[in-house]
Length: 315
Image (cartoon, rainbow, N blue to C red; front, side, top):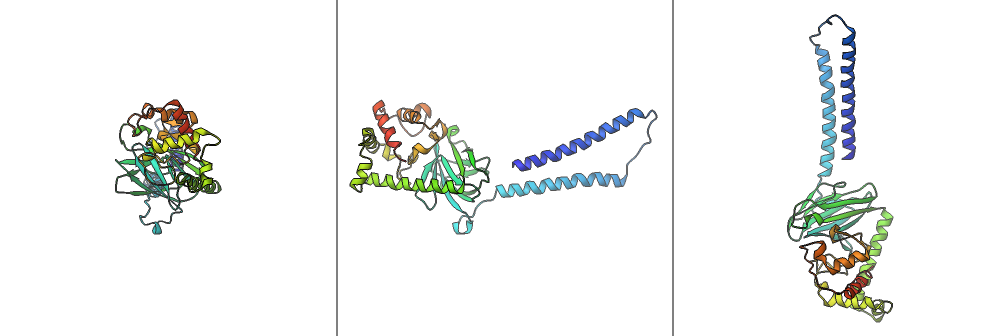
């Protein structure tokens, strides 16, 4: 899109310079002539010449614009075997956050997408409640997320960096704070991130299942008593009924909290991530995002500290 814009601007600038130059020359020559110049009633050759140039320029702009539009609007095929995708993602819109599932892995995240540079990513876009619209302006067109009617879109970035995304369809009171970010990494960094994320899910599953004494010791809180207390609050005070932390798709009333300490934003963009802000969110989420589905549990400051310690241990 940027390249097309620059191309059109340069063409327009060239036309402006030529036309302005001809006007200036005509004015300059006209001042020197005292007598009325010989009148020219037109020339068929000149008319054809001045018509052909603009027509060719317009055809050129039409072709490059159509090519870009067709590329941006290309929709992946529904069947993965025919899609030729290098990476598969499922993005599900919720009021008001995004669930991210990485195909072929146990990785589930929220509001942050990680992809490798130069790879073709096929995104299945769906919704769990109302109509949303998935949009990363610098990478792809808008795509509606309609409950029960999944759509597909391509994501592909040719430059590493962080790209802003948002919901582009009004979906309720906190529509403004339904943002997400796309992190484009080198292939090596992406593979490292994916490996670390999958290992984290495995450790968390073992911890919750208490499969062995060694697993108990990892989360028993010997180094920090708040860790085990925070875990018990999470399991017994209702948090676990809405939030998964071990790579499972359910429950998903609220975002999956696996590796939450590795994220950059909270509440789909309403807060930047920090230990302090995580505590503030747990203390009173309605203060920051009125209408969100997380109620105020009236946690004490001590309970908040314990919960924060547990959640930040999920690395």
